[in-house]
Image (spheres, rainbow, N blue to C red):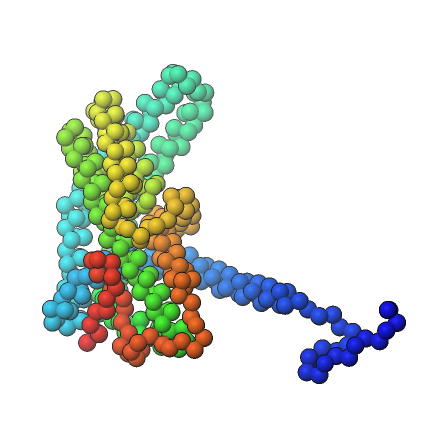
Length: 392
């Protein structure tokens, strides 16, 4: 009955009579929402700082990728008995020798012929324009001409002048020197850096964070080594076809194919289209069709055989997710963002999966060994993760 007195509140409930009870799910929802908003704000701030310093961001990211690529060399030298500093130095020198050799043999020649490459591209676009107007499509000549002019203008603007090329060369040289120093310290002191980070993690989550970090390193190492092998196979396959058909700029197009392979989906498509256009202008329609068939076959072999076989689970992502990541990275940071988008997504996915499958139990012990014994993870060739010797 409405006139009955309200039952007494049990002692210790902390609620005064007459106040409504808040459902537990409301409290949980508010707590989770607040945590999500706080994390989103922190993430936005970090992302804003990264965009404000693109050179530092890209340099550090590139150094991490190269450290993952050269870590087997440094690890093998350490196991052979060399000190950590000497092992890291020899690994960096090996990497620098390979990169400088490619730059002198291919890169400088490609840069000198970049102006020659823009002319065939413009001529190929003109042929397509004529076909689109006079062919079966019958498109509006004015609209087609406007599109053609925008594309050709962009191509010529993308080709740097000698002054801009020299300035860009100095800019790139400074970045490469910084990358070399960072790779050296990552290989030499990576164990200490990782141990320093683990010391600042609560004991009950230290093992979980350590495992997630090793999973991320393993994924990154598999990705960067796999993409280098795939890029070499793509460049050799398409470059051999261009050489056999006698395409004048086959070396520059081979380099473009190699670099384009580092941007999944979009890079291979763009480099293949450029190869077909240049062949159409410098040779004839038959050779262009042959190059088109070779490009399609190589891309199919890459997507259906090479990447699953070489990379394994390192790039276990849906093509739609890869396309969105590459597009977003390109819009935010240009070519550098497109190059880093996929490895960042792959590493993030593997870390989240590890944290989901290995939750930190309350009161769980820390990782085996003291923080000083923890070292940066180094993946082996069979996919396992081992620990290199502690930096001396």
